Amino acid sequence: MKRHRWLPDLSPLIEHRDYRLVFSARSVTFLGGMITHTTVPYQVYEMTGSVLAVGFMGLCELVPLLFMAFVGGALADYIDRRKLVLFSELAFTVLTALLIVNAVWLRELWLLYVFAALTAAVFGIQRPALDSLFPRLVPAGQLPAAISLNSAMINTGMLAGPALAGLLIATVPLGWVYAFDLATYVISLGCLLMVRAVAPPESADRPSLRSVVTGLRYAKNRQELLGTYLVDMNAMFFGMPTALYPALAAKLGGPGVLGLLYSAPALGALVASLTSRWAERVHRHGLAVAVAAACWGLAIVGFGLSDWLWLALVFLALAGAADMISGLFRGTIWGQTIPDRLRGRLAGIEVISYSSGPTLGQVESGLAAKLFGLTGSVVSGGLLCVAGTIVISALLPKFVSYDNREGIARREAEEAEYAAAGSST
Image 1 (cartoon, rainbow, N blue to C red):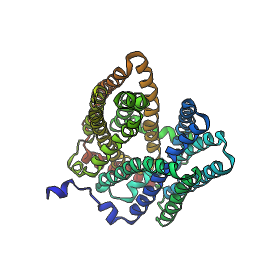
Image 2: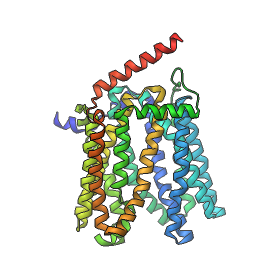
Image 3: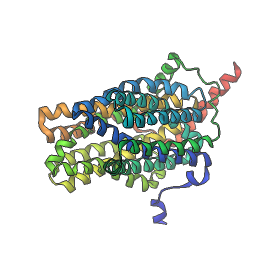
Image 4: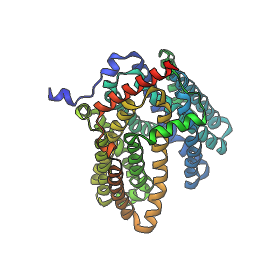
């Protein structure tokens, strides 16, 4: 019995056909996407020999992502979310084919930057639709299990994708590396075509600036939602030292350990997701998010103070596990409490919160390293993450006291009231 409690809950995959199809589509394309995500920067560096040229890709991605996430959120609340995911996947397929053409025939650097910008724009369209689609495919009670399975799939791809990319880059021309990713989209499109239509919510708001503002205003007035965004952004801004990994690798053993630093958090997150069935018995989800974010910060402090590679990897794995647990409860709060008519727009806000935090965090850690050194940057970032989590929790008491049983009931009552108001008018 004890063993059963710690095994992942597979009921969403077993009981729900459409969730199984979407999960399968995401599994193959995420693996392929991680291969391309690893290969494109390699190709840029191979063509330029410049680390700055590689770093500039992040700026090309951030601006369209921040804008299109709002557009994607508004669209996800107005049209069939399954179609939005399907058409986005088709756009990714075309962009990957462009990479093959460029790698084999054109070999143009500017096309790689165009690819980065367009891919980020399409991601901004797809991700809100995808995030708001899952709560329609499984019942609210199985949402934590579905989020845990999604996290396990993502972290498996984050571990296997870069490793497979390195193997492919070393053995075949780049065109064939991108062709592997293209093949995954063929599989994904086949799965998504079999998913039944997901009709937009009744009385859906037409995409407009006003509808986007409605979503922002709703998030602002809900402390449990605002807390999830702010706690995550705080943790990623202060406690995300990935920009320092190359320098820290030199301190901990040389360039050969760099890949281990990137892989350790994903490994910890994967283990946490596969053993997260205990989360079903936790109801104070806001408090769980805050505690997990603080544990992330403490683990980053331990990582910064570690002079031995094995200890540094242990702390990074613990940080990854804490981040996964925080993400599990954040995703459950979003899926169980946000009314269906607003899920797309709120998912767009979530995309911005978790995308901007790490990008800005790399800048913060780099500046802090110039002022306080490598160890000072990592340790101070971890401590500020903990302090920021405490301050946010104190300022948002309804976030910390949030109980999912009350949240589900409130959302159902709110949707019933909205439907009754709509029918009366």
